[in-house]
Amino acid sequence: MTQKKVAFVTGGAQGIGEATVRRLSADGFAVAIADLNLDGAQKLADELNANGGTAIAIKLDVSDKDAFEAAVDEAAEKFGDFNVIVNNAGLAPTTPVGTVTPEQFDLVTKVNIGGTMWGTQAATRKFRELGHGGKIINASSQAGVVGNPNLMLYCSTKFAIRGITQVAARELASEGITANAYAPGIVKTPMMMDIAHQVAVNAGKDDEWGMGTFSKDIALGRLSEPEDVAAGISFLAGPDSDYITGQTLEVDGGMQFH
Ligand SMILES: NC(=O)C1=CN([C@@H]2O[C@H](COP(=O)(O)OP(=O)(O)OC[C@H]3O[C@@H](n4cnc5c(N)ncnc54)[C@H](O)[C@@H]3O)[C@@H](O)[C@H]2O)C=CC1
Ligand SMILES: CC(=O)C(C)=O
Image: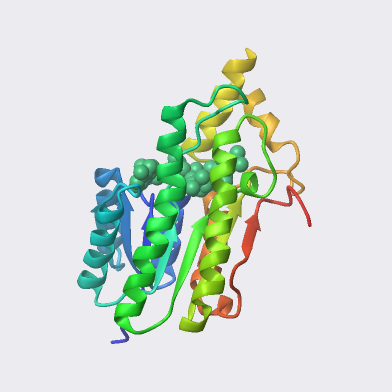
Protein backbone atom coordinates (compact mmCIF):
# COMPACT_ATOMS: atom_id res chain seq x y z
CA MET A 1 0.00 0.00 0.00
CA THR A 2 1.27 3.48 -0.84
CA GLN A 3 2.22 5.41 2.28
CA LYS A 4 -0.21 8.29 2.78
CA LYS A 5 1.21 11.79 2.92
CA VAL A 6 0.80 13.43 6.32
CA ALA A 7 -0.78 16.82 7.00
CA PHE A 8 -0.95 18.67 10.32
CA VAL A 9 -3.75 21.26 10.66
CA THR A 10 -4.02 23.67 13.58
CA GLY A 11 -7.42 24.97 14.62
CA GLY A 12 -8.80 21.92 12.84
CA ALA A 13 -11.83 21.37 15.07
CA GLN A 14 -14.11 23.99 13.49
CA GLY A 15 -14.54 26.52 10.71
CA ILE A 16 -11.93 26.74 7.96
CA GLY A 17 -9.68 24.29 9.82
CA GLU A 18 -12.40 21.65 9.97
CA ALA A 19 -13.20 22.07 6.26
CA THR A 20 -9.48 21.78 5.52
CA VAL A 21 -9.13 18.59 7.55
CA ARG A 22 -12.08 17.08 5.68
CA ARG A 23 -10.71 18.17 2.29
CA LEU A 24 -7.15 16.95 2.91
CA SER A 25 -8.51 13.66 4.21
CA ALA A 26 -10.57 13.31 1.03
CA ASP A 27 -7.41 14.15 -0.95
CA GLY A 28 -5.76 11.11 0.67
CA PHE A 29 -3.71 12.67 3.46
CA ALA A 30 -3.41 11.21 6.93
CA VAL A 31 -4.33 14.23 9.06
CA ALA A 32 -3.33 15.35 12.54
CA ILE A 33 -6.03 17.67 13.91
CA ALA A 34 -4.40 19.98 16.45
CA ASP A 35 -6.68 22.24 18.45
CA LEU A 36 -7.26 23.70 21.90
CA ASN A 37 -10.65 22.01 21.62
CA LEU A 38 -9.64 18.35 21.98
CA ASP A 39 -13.23 17.08 22.11
CA GLY A 40 -14.07 18.72 18.79
CA ALA A 41 -10.85 17.47 17.19
CA GLN A 42 -11.40 13.93 18.51
CA LYS A 43 -14.99 13.83 17.27
CA LEU A 44 -13.83 14.82 13.78
CA ALA A 45 -10.97 12.29 13.83
CA ASP A 46 -13.37 9.52 14.92
CA GLU A 47 -15.76 10.41 12.09
CA LEU A 48 -13.00 10.39 9.47
CA ASN A 49 -11.52 7.12 10.75
CA ALA A 50 -14.95 5.49 10.68
CA ASN A 51 -15.31 6.49 7.03
CA GLY A 52 -12.02 5.21 5.65
CA GLY A 53 -9.80 8.18 6.52
CA THR A 54 -6.75 8.29 8.77
CA ALA A 55 -6.74 10.98 11.45
CA ILE A 56 -5.63 11.70 14.98
CA ALA A 57 -6.58 14.47 17.40
CA ILE A 58 -3.95 16.35 19.41
CA LYS A 59 -4.65 18.94 22.10
CA LEU A 60 -2.44 21.93 21.33
CA ASP A 61 -2.18 25.60 22.22
CA VAL A 62 -0.24 26.92 19.22
CA SER A 63 1.23 29.76 21.28
CA ASP A 64 3.23 27.19 23.32
CA LYS A 65 6.45 26.54 21.39
CA ASP A 66 7.48 23.39 23.29
CA ALA A 67 4.00 21.89 23.04
CA PHE A 68 4.03 22.61 19.30
CA GLU A 69 7.34 20.79 18.84
CA ALA A 70 5.97 17.81 20.82
CA ALA A 71 2.75 17.75 18.80
CA VAL A 72 4.65 17.64 15.51
CA ASP A 73 6.81 14.81 16.88
CA GLU A 74 3.67 12.93 17.94
CA ALA A 75 2.06 13.25 14.51
CA ALA A 76 5.23 12.19 12.68
CA GLU A 77 5.70 9.22 14.99
CA LYS A 78 2.08 8.06 14.70
CA PHE A 79 1.97 8.33 10.91
CA GLY A 80 5.62 7.61 10.06
CA ASP A 81 6.08 10.80 8.02
CA PHE A 82 5.32 14.53 7.95
CA ASN A 83 4.77 16.50 4.74
CA VAL A 84 2.44 19.47 5.16
CA ILE A 85 1.62 21.89 7.95
CA VAL A 86 -1.38 24.23 7.84
CA ASN A 87 -0.94 26.94 10.47
CA ASN A 88 -4.60 27.87 10.55
CA ALA A 89 -5.49 28.62 14.20
CA GLY A 90 -6.06 32.28 14.97
CA LEU A 91 -7.95 34.80 17.07
CA ALA A 92 -9.79 37.88 15.79
CA PRO A 93 -11.05 40.25 18.46
CA THR A 94 -12.85 43.34 17.23
CA THR A 95 -10.56 46.27 18.04
CA PRO A 96 -11.45 49.72 16.68
CA VAL A 97 -8.52 52.15 16.90
CA GLY A 98 -8.10 53.25 20.51
CA THR A 99 -9.46 50.09 22.11
CA VAL A 100 -6.58 47.57 21.95
CA THR A 101 -5.46 46.52 25.44
CA PRO A 102 -2.00 45.18 26.38
CA GLU A 103 -3.66 41.89 27.38
CA GLN A 104 -5.31 41.54 23.96
CA PHE A 105 -2.05 42.48 22.26
CA ASP A 106 -0.12 39.77 24.16
CA LEU A 107 -2.70 37.04 23.55
CA VAL A 108 -3.39 37.73 19.88
CA THR A 109 0.25 38.20 18.89
CA LYS A 110 1.19 35.03 20.79
CA VAL A 111 -1.49 32.94 19.10
CA ASN A 112 -1.51 34.41 15.58
CA ILE A 113 2.15 35.35 15.05
CA GLY A 114 3.66 33.02 17.66
CA GLY A 115 1.56 30.05 16.58
CA THR A 116 2.55 30.54 12.94
CA MET A 117 6.21 31.01 13.80
CA TRP A 118 6.39 27.98 16.10
CA GLY A 119 4.53 25.89 13.53
CA THR A 120 6.88 26.98 10.76
CA GLN A 121 9.91 26.17 12.90
CA ALA A 122 8.62 22.83 14.17
CA ALA A 123 7.68 21.67 10.68
CA THR A 124 11.04 22.78 9.25
CA ARG A 125 12.89 20.83 11.96
CA LYS A 126 10.80 17.75 11.17
CA PHE A 127 11.28 18.00 7.38
CA ARG A 128 15.05 18.24 7.97
CA GLU A 129 15.06 15.25 10.34
CA LEU A 130 13.15 13.21 7.80
CA GLY A 131 15.52 14.32 5.04
CA HIS A 132 12.91 15.61 2.64
CA GLY A 133 11.10 18.80 1.71
CA GLY A 134 7.62 19.82 2.68
CA LYS A 135 4.93 22.46 2.48
CA ILE A 136 4.22 25.20 4.99
CA ILE A 137 0.81 26.86 4.56
CA ASN A 138 -0.10 29.81 6.76
CA ALA A 139 -3.42 31.57 7.41
CA SER A 140 -3.31 35.23 6.53
CA SER A 141 -6.51 37.05 5.53
CA GLN A 142 -7.84 39.67 3.17
CA ALA A 143 -7.25 41.72 6.32
CA GLY A 144 -3.57 40.84 5.95
CA VAL A 145 -3.50 42.37 2.47
CA VAL A 146 -5.50 45.56 3.07
CA GLY A 147 -6.13 47.23 6.42
CA ASN A 148 -9.64 46.54 7.66
CA PRO A 149 -11.59 48.95 9.91
CA ASN A 150 -12.28 47.58 13.42
CA LEU A 151 -9.53 44.95 13.18
CA MET A 152 -6.30 46.87 13.90
CA LEU A 153 -4.72 44.23 16.15
CA TYR A 154 -5.82 41.30 14.00
CA CYS A 155 -4.69 42.97 10.74
CA SER A 156 -1.25 43.61 12.17
CA THR A 157 -0.82 39.89 12.87
CA LYS A 158 -2.13 38.83 9.47
CA PHE A 159 0.33 41.16 7.70
CA ALA A 160 3.08 39.68 9.92
CA ILE A 161 2.12 36.16 8.88
CA ARG A 162 2.77 37.07 5.24
CA GLY A 163 6.20 38.27 6.35
CA ILE A 164 6.95 34.98 8.10
CA THR A 165 5.79 33.13 4.98
CA GLN A 166 7.98 35.13 2.59
CA VAL A 167 11.08 34.75 4.77
CA ALA A 168 10.54 31.00 5.10
CA ALA A 169 9.97 30.70 1.34
CA ARG A 170 13.25 32.41 0.48
CA GLU A 171 15.31 30.73 3.18
CA LEU A 172 14.03 27.18 2.79
CA ALA A 173 13.56 26.85 -0.97
CA SER A 174 16.93 25.17 -1.50
CA GLU A 175 15.82 22.42 0.91
CA GLY A 176 12.69 21.65 -1.11
CA ILE A 177 10.44 23.37 1.41
CA THR A 178 7.81 25.77 0.10
CA ALA A 179 5.88 28.31 2.17
CA ASN A 180 2.68 29.99 1.06
CA ALA A 181 -0.19 31.78 2.73
CA TYR A 182 -3.90 31.84 2.06
CA ALA A 183 -6.00 34.95 2.48
CA PRO A 184 -9.68 34.14 2.97
CA GLY A 185 -12.30 36.86 2.55
CA ILE A 186 -15.45 36.78 4.64
CA VAL A 187 -16.08 33.17 5.61
CA LYS A 188 -19.16 31.80 7.37
CA THR A 189 -17.48 30.51 10.54
CA PRO A 190 -17.96 31.15 14.27
CA MET A 191 -15.06 33.67 14.14
CA MET A 192 -16.68 35.79 11.46
CA MET A 193 -20.13 35.61 13.08
CA ASP A 194 -18.58 36.92 16.33
CA ILE A 195 -16.84 39.81 14.54
CA ALA A 196 -20.02 40.81 12.69
CA HIS A 197 -22.00 40.64 15.94
CA GLN A 198 -19.49 42.80 17.82
CA VAL A 199 -19.34 45.44 15.08
CA ALA A 200 -23.15 45.53 15.04
CA VAL A 201 -23.39 45.87 18.83
CA ASN A 202 -20.87 48.75 18.77
CA ALA A 203 -23.00 50.53 16.14
CA GLY A 204 -26.34 49.72 17.78
CA LYS A 205 -27.38 47.63 14.74
CA ASP A 206 -28.21 43.98 14.08
CA ASP A 207 -25.89 41.15 13.07
CA GLU A 208 -27.01 41.21 9.44
CA TRP A 209 -25.96 44.86 9.22
CA GLY A 210 -22.64 43.91 10.87
CA MET A 211 -21.97 41.21 8.27
CA GLY A 212 -23.02 43.61 5.52
CA THR A 213 -20.22 46.00 6.48
CA PHE A 214 -17.74 43.26 5.61
CA SER A 215 -19.44 41.66 2.63
CA LYS A 216 -20.33 44.65 0.46
CA ASP A 217 -17.15 44.47 -1.67
CA ILE A 218 -17.28 40.80 -2.68
CA ALA A 219 -17.27 40.73 -6.51
CA LEU A 220 -18.72 37.21 -6.68
CA GLY A 221 -21.65 38.43 -4.63
CA ARG A 222 -21.74 35.89 -1.82
CA LEU A 223 -20.03 35.15 1.47
CA SER A 224 -17.39 32.40 1.45
CA GLU A 225 -18.06 28.88 2.66
CA PRO A 226 -15.20 27.28 4.63
CA GLU A 227 -14.98 24.73 1.79
CA ASP A 228 -14.03 27.51 -0.68
CA VAL A 229 -10.93 28.18 1.39
CA ALA A 230 -10.21 24.48 1.93
CA ALA A 231 -10.11 24.05 -1.86
CA GLY A 232 -7.35 26.65 -2.09
CA ILE A 233 -5.43 24.99 0.75
CA SER A 234 -5.81 21.63 -0.98
CA PHE A 235 -4.09 23.13 -4.04
CA LEU A 236 -1.28 24.56 -1.91
CA ALA A 237 -0.85 21.19 -0.15
CA GLY A 238 -0.78 19.15 -3.35
CA PRO A 239 1.77 18.59 -6.13
CA ASP A 240 0.21 21.13 -8.53
CA SER A 241 1.65 23.95 -6.38
CA ASP A 242 5.22 22.58 -6.35
CA TYR A 243 6.62 25.59 -8.27
CA ILE A 244 4.81 28.18 -6.13
CA THR A 245 6.41 29.65 -3.02
CA GLY A 246 6.23 32.87 -1.00
CA GLN A 247 2.78 33.67 -2.38
CA THR A 248 -0.51 34.60 -0.77
CA LEU A 249 -3.47 32.88 -2.39
CA GLU A 250 -6.43 35.24 -2.01
CA VAL A 251 -9.59 33.16 -1.72
CA ASP A 252 -11.94 36.09 -1.21
CA GLY A 253 -14.47 36.10 -4.05
CA GLY A 254 -12.70 39.08 -5.61
CA MET A 255 -12.59 41.56 -2.73
CA GLN A 256 -9.46 43.23 -4.06
CA PHE A 257 -7.19 43.00 -7.07
CA HIS A 258 -3.52 43.94 -7.50
N1 LIG B 1 -13.65 33.43 9.10
C1 LIG B 1 -13.14 34.33 8.28
O1 LIG B 1 -13.89 35.11 7.64
C2 LIG B 1 -11.67 34.45 8.09
C3 LIG B 1 -10.75 33.69 8.78
N2 LIG B 1 -9.40 33.84 8.54
C4 LIG B 1 -8.41 33.06 9.27
O2 LIG B 1 -8.63 31.68 9.10
C5 LIG B 1 -8.26 30.96 10.27
C6 LIG B 1 -9.44 30.12 10.74
O3 LIG B 1 -10.54 30.99 10.98
P1 LIG B 1 -11.99 30.46 11.40
O4 LIG B 1 -12.18 29.06 10.96
O5 LIG B 1 -12.93 31.51 10.97
O6 LIG B 1 -11.87 30.52 13.01
P2 LIG B 1 -12.77 29.87 14.16
O7 LIG B 1 -12.63 30.79 15.34
O8 LIG B 1 -14.13 29.58 13.68
O9 LIG B 1 -12.00 28.50 14.48
C7 LIG B 1 -10.69 28.56 15.01
C8 LIG B 1 -10.26 27.21 15.56
O10 LIG B 1 -8.95 27.43 16.12
C9 LIG B 1 -8.91 26.91 17.43
N3 LIG B 1 -7.95 27.70 18.24
C10 LIG B 1 -8.09 28.96 18.69
N4 LIG B 1 -7.01 29.31 19.41
C11 LIG B 1 -6.16 28.26 19.39
C12 LIG B 1 -4.89 28.01 19.93
N5 LIG B 1 -4.26 28.93 20.71
N6 LIG B 1 -4.29 26.83 19.72
C13 LIG B 1 -4.92 25.88 18.97
N7 LIG B 1 -6.15 26.04 18.44
C14 LIG B 1 -6.75 27.22 18.64
C15 LIG B 1 -10.34 27.01 17.96
O11 LIG B 1 -10.56 26.10 19.02
C16 LIG B 1 -11.14 26.68 16.69
O12 LIG B 1 -11.33 25.30 16.55
C17 LIG B 1 -7.83 32.02 11.28
O13 LIG B 1 -6.43 32.14 11.28
C18 LIG B 1 -8.47 33.28 10.77
O14 LIG B 1 -7.76 34.42 11.16
C19 LIG B 1 -8.94 34.71 7.62
C20 LIG B 1 -9.80 35.47 6.89
C21 LIG B 1 -11.23 35.41 7.05
C1 LIG C 1 -11.81 37.66 9.99
C2 LIG C 1 -11.12 38.23 8.84
O1 LIG C 1 -10.07 37.79 8.51
C3 LIG C 1 -11.66 39.28 8.11
C4 LIG C 1 -12.87 39.97 8.54
O2 LIG C 1 -11.11 39.64 7.13
